[in-house]
Length: 194
Image 1: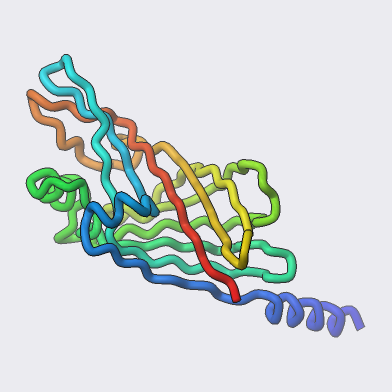
Image 2: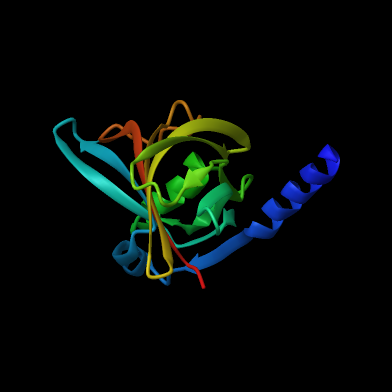
């Protein structure tokens, strides 16, 4: 009897869960900047005196997740993008980013996983454990999300701070321009639900 109840519960969970996925493409830096779905920010200091933030965006990415519609809970979220989709609106900077920093010739993409569960109806900011496969190595990180569900639109806004050293990303700094070790990452994803 217990086994039958367990099977029934497991089957009901499977029926309630649906896979969601989406692929997003932007034509150029300006289009990605307007939407700001996947953003990274690093601080650059020139000649040891002048600091400014350098913004970059991901021009194409794909995400998947399991959604329990009845309880509005996301699980097993993945987010992947080709390294060459990272764009900072500077050809020379992007060439260094893709090849020296990210090793695009050997490692083609970045894969982020967040197991969850992420409770969509919970409006509070919550912290989650994630992993990223970057330069062939899986690295742990923490990310905070706020979520909402309005007009059949599920929205996730996340932020995290990574370290070049901790992620084992080679520092692209040169003598006259030094990058901070800190990389600020912002995520803003929306998914329509019918």
